[in-house]
Image (cartoon, rainbow, N blue to C red; front, side):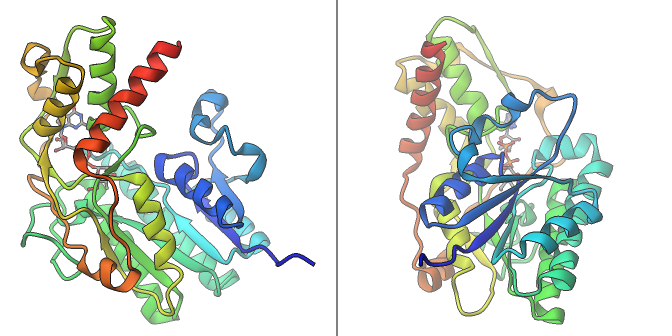
Length: 328
Ligand code: G4F
């Protein structure tokens, strides 16, 4: 008789991280379940593009982060060994435009899942996708698990609330609940609203003569950019320890948006100055100027370290966009 498969539930399975995590866990022989919000207005095949190659290997359930009842139903039925809560309104800029829905969805969604686990499946291990945006106007550089939070956006505030909820459920109800404080992580599956994909896609289009200019906001801000494929492994490692804890995940290196732009354009032998225009409308009401991770704890306790270098990441994104545009 075969070994009983471990069950995992992923919220946000259609996103960049969710899709890579699902692939990673399928390889580890998990029974993978994912939550998808059915939106009548959206074209389903488009929304599921990142998981189309694994749709026959996963179980999709219809639920919404805004509905406690829909989450309870799934958690009670599956009783997953592990839950990865990745779903969120994760676009920082949009969180300023619609504070109310960002705070409602991100905070209540996390609270509903934690509460459902506590009452209906208390042995499920829980992972919360916290964010380096919580450090915001940084109090210390580099940032680690002990650095105080100073969020600069409704999104950052919602992540601090989720982080504190996770910690409180761990301490008050003894749930196995962890937060991964992930710094920016990118890939060819990154959404087009985030700056790295906006750049890589535009560079590919410009190279192919399909676009003439690229409008950006603040290109001086610095981030610690890693590769999403390295980071999903860290999520899983956190849930394999004896006891739950919080971990910073990053590369320990920082580069500006301008650095990303320069490498991306020069990879296709173009001078970025000829194509990039600054649009002040793309600036944020409050900016996070500099992020850089101190991931010593993850290295020591999870034996995790990032594999991809910044330049490799930029080049892989541009190459993938060039390839997919040529295929059209
Ligand atoms: O790519 P971004 O939108 O990512 P941001 O705000 O750093 O947040 C991302 O990383 C967080 C982890 O730290 C996640 F929690 C979060 O969900 C998300 O994944 O912007 C990066 C930087 C910002 O400083 C922004 O002002 O790029 C600057 N930027 C300049 N021009 C732009 C643009 N950002 C976007 N999205 N679009 C622009 O045209």
